Image (tube, rainbow, N blue to C red; front, side, top):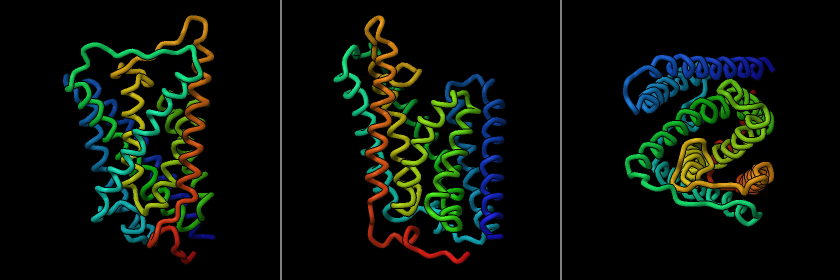
Length: 268
């Protein structure tokens, strides 16, 4: 029990430190006169977060291989598999919304390859940073000490709260980002690392940008019929939660062979 309490304290401290660093570097790079200042910020944060993961894992007396952040021979394949799954999921949402009616999509003119690469690399870096900050050391250390559902619940709350601090409303943070946290958490634990969820996370965000489901203009743009904006918004949420629920169930019941993290018994 003592180990469990200290693990929770360390995880909260780790996530709080990551959030403080995110806020600090956001302020530092915001004034830089370069278009790629967010990329620079995220590269720095990825490096720092990885270093903190190593330090906290040693503090917790966990080998790095047990928290899913060490690249393996199959890591690239897992990233690509996650990216493919994420793009499929992101593509299903506009299809469902279109089928429910009062919504149409059109191609945004003059979207350049530069813009596509800009957002693709941005969302890849966002995904790497968030997977390190939430699904690496925090999730795996909690899983080893607390078990599957307590670990998922704790990270669900912490991940949602960071998105509230980032400007999301409470429903957006808990039903939106929080649901994603559950999906990425199961993907990490079932595949023994953050490679697949990083690809999945990046593709989901990039796919939503492509199809016009982000604030920034993507490749396509969706428009609700006049007077049906609330209906379309509701349909978007229903589609999102349905897609996430199916994906969560699939990863929950996925039992890969030789998954040492999921099947291992950790001494408390």
